[in-house]
Picture 1 (cartoon, one colour):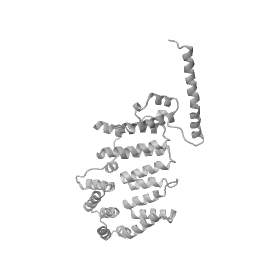
Picture 2 (tube, helix red, strand yellow):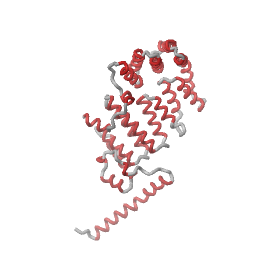
Picture 3 (cartoon, one colour):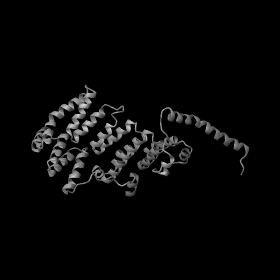
Length: 341
């Protein structure tokens, strides 16, 4: 059936209105790219790692029409819709991931996607293998976001904090925190690096970083107090450790633990001295003591798993232990959980 003149006029009017209406948006995008220096979104040919069922016809039309940023915004609106619905957290994850692929220079989706895996979905299971996959994917997402946005301090901080808070991998946390030092960053970042080395423990590096904090800000009372504490409580024992006097180092640490048996750093240091002395059974027992005392001491639990494996003990693996052994298989978190269910 042929369209009448009136129908053709209406359709033509709608098309013209759509084109005219898109001009301000196109000009805004052009301004952002040319004046603000924002790069182009990812080429369509590289968008391969997402669930196509998350895309509606309108979104596909926006993508094919060159409005990748508009499609990403629409996807993110879908995240907000799914977030408050029961049983849709894994669907949320697919939509979040699709958003990062559509507009990789939008920072918020990278941060929220990684956080959703490393914290929200992570808390939904006690299975160490599944947790390892989630942490691996969260870290990979943040590293990918950094590769697209190497000037964004927030992504470096999110990645460093994930290493620090979820994996207790203080060396990697320090590496990524240090990457922010040439950018504008909060002052407490420098102290977090120092505190991580305290817990590792690596007393000389902790002191170096607290000294760095004091050079940047002589009025940093937190750094000054930490420096005095380290020099008084831990440095004498560390010096004996470096000299090979393991018994002397243990004696000093044990004296402090008699006063404060819940000293996390002291327990970690005691276990470290025992490891250096080759007394692995005692080191294992000390790490186990720390793991039992402190619910959030994932470093102690990882060390229990590592030493337990060496000693042939029947110990439960941890997510961080599995991550250090080998990277988990390349499988999406959503697929893992759905297969199990």
